[in-house]
Image (tube, rainbow, N blue to C red; front, side):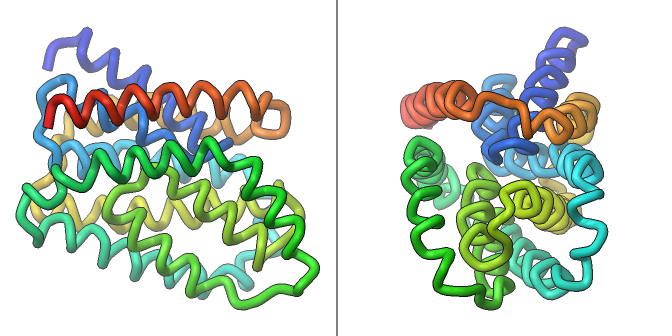
Length: 248
């Protein structure tokens, strides 16, 4: 890969890391970018997961204050995320590549719709929050399976579940989302690496962007204009869906 391509991937990684920290849909930027530079779909998925994992950790570190007194409560959700992500990533490398290529445009499209309706989900969360908290780990396990398979909008799914059953404080839920997504991504990255589905130079370029992006995004999450950011991600998601449909 030439330096310009690597710089492009680093910029995509920075944007994805920041968006993941605040919203949770950075894969809609980096996966199409990896496809555009010629990386095959499954390897692009593995490379994307490996490259964004450090950024997820950086965004979790930015939320360390909100997480400091919650790690005991999160231990089983973390375990469930690891198990779920391992299952999801194993499905990717075990099933025929055609299955993944066929389903990904639909997953990206569904993730884009989910981002667009996030305000409605937030209102529904507020309506049901008074019903009381329930165990969160089954939800994080199921979302981990999806995140291990293809992580677009994993963070939004986690925020929806955490807002219902974990904490009504959005910042505490966002901190939990960041650390749960980070362990899911790291687990899936290990599975992809074992099966040789990571292009390490491209993953390193993504990581060089996603680490500062994740930290900056985590620090700025309280001040980001949510509607503007959501609109931008929806536009990117529509473009990514069309790109994947037309090219696969």
